[in-house]
Image (cartoon, rainbow, N blue to C red):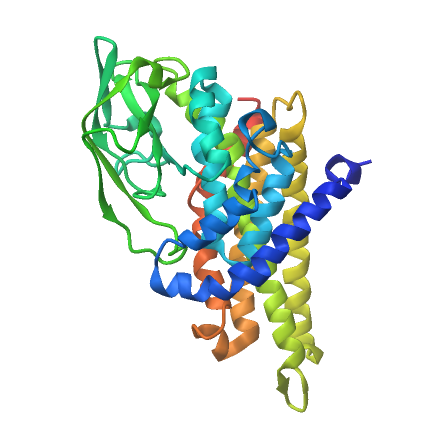
Length: 383
């Protein structure tokens, strides 16, 4: 009964096989170059759009596949096993559009979502600031109403897809005394919107992360997402679900590292026998496989709960547990994968060092592991 909760029907098994083939045959050979060049892989974006992979986050009425949260995250997992930066392309299509799907008006949805489902448009989620990362209520970006328009001023940081996104979901303070924020749809061609510096990162180098700057950016009142003053609800409602993407990415990284280390241990000969005949290595590989499988089970359970017509009241606890478990697993597994390869694992000639660097961010973005523990503990306490 528990297995049936998130079993994939045959047509989605075929879809997973297609995504896996794309990932292994077309994207994996590009992964090292994407990392080394730190260039956005526009060819991978085009490939995903061509095969309708970017339609996975969307309902059929918006031009998407209508296949749900579980299938979306299965696809993210498959992509991340090959190239975590490429997986982020799909993750960000969900993150940047969830505010519109969950809280946007019908007009906003029809205006934006079909273009995202086709891959014509890319999305970005602009919440974090230099002084307001895990505490969004402390943000300094402000929006002031001027007639039937809003004027936005401020700077965001750590924004994925900076410079390549076609629109940004920008959160701004609209009532500082009451610490109320509002979410706005800001198209990239709005006068006053510029992109500041791009970050030089430890990993996920093929995905640009930067600082959108808003200087007297004017947007019409119809670009308010949800209610004025309801930005925190939009942000938390989005992150409750989008953190599953980070969990799926982490599971994919862990599985990719496990598979590579296992294959290496079969071929590498030490002391006259394959590396995987040594008990110390056997135990390490067994632990890697087990932890990855356990993280996947929790991820799929949380995805299945999110796909229910009436998700449970404690969905946030499940998505936080999945993200926490998967992120910590990805870090532990990739560290062990480097160890299995020994000195070779420490070089860029082999992919596990890249996987180790990519894994670290899964403990940070979409809510740090510490924040996930707070969410889980509060849910347990009934807070």
